[in-house]
Image 1 (cartoon, one colour):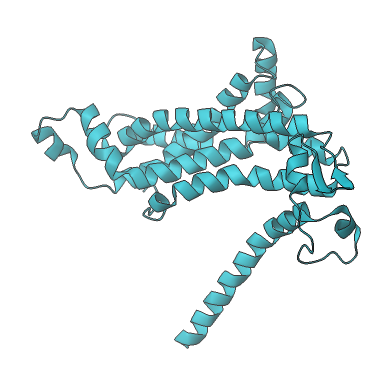
Image 2 (cartoon, rainbow, N blue to C red):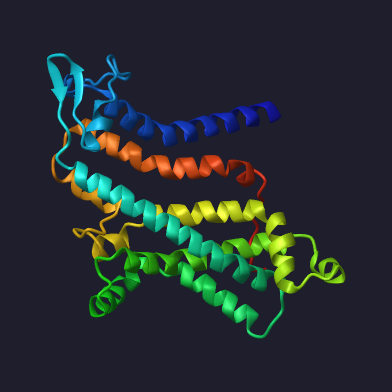
Amino acid sequence: MQRRMTLWAWLGIAVAVVWTLLPIYWFLKMSLLTPDEIARFPPPLVPLDPTPAAYFNIFGFDYQVTPELVRRASGQAGQIINGLINSLIVSIVVTAITMLVVVPLAYVFARLDFRFKQALLITILLSVALPPVSTLIPFYALYVQLGLAGTLFGLIVVTLTITIPFVTWMLIGYLRNLPPVERLARVDGYSRLETLVFIVIPLARSGIAVAAVIAFLFAWNEYTYALVLVNGTPANTLATALSGFLFQHPEPSHLAAALVVSILPPVLVAYFLQRHIAEMNLVDPIR
């Protein structure tokens, strides 16, 4: 019986892995196909003559496949490059500000007692539950009046209204389960701030690493606000650039290459922080 359950568990894991990786593989494969292979039906499961031409093309470079054949740069290369740069700026800045605000804020909620603590904690939870689309029109009206529409600064500010509450709520639970080091630190002469910086943060590096990845992913994948606030402006992000790219009837391999490129930054961030992520065990912060 136990062996049968183990087999079913492994089967479920295999299905989940295939379900997750198959679309990524399909786009990666399509980005390496030649136009003739893309037009073939049924399409090949593996590129017969893989070429990186599409990746050069979406960044504005021609690629010489053979002495007689040159695949020209994509006409949408400018918007892809601009969107990629803007998305990196927004994601890095949002992640940095989020962590600077959230780490001390979550520490206060997790380790200290003060008046109205539960009420404020519930307020954070409710702000996380609020759908971004419900605040889209008020933000747009405010941004038009303040002149922030179509700016990276405006997009960073509105993205922080999502990342700060969510990451705070998530990190509180992790900090609550750290050993009670405050008293020992105070005996050794540490102030409250020194305890946070030199003891709590090193102990909580796993949770902070996961929180940073989640903040980066939120900022990188932000689409709703970006579509309304910066779409069609120089502050356009990669997510909205790709959606516009789709309706401009690009070469399929160019679209596939652009989608693969959009996946790489979150994958790299998660890869470099995976050692800390593996150590983390999240719990519910409200109990």
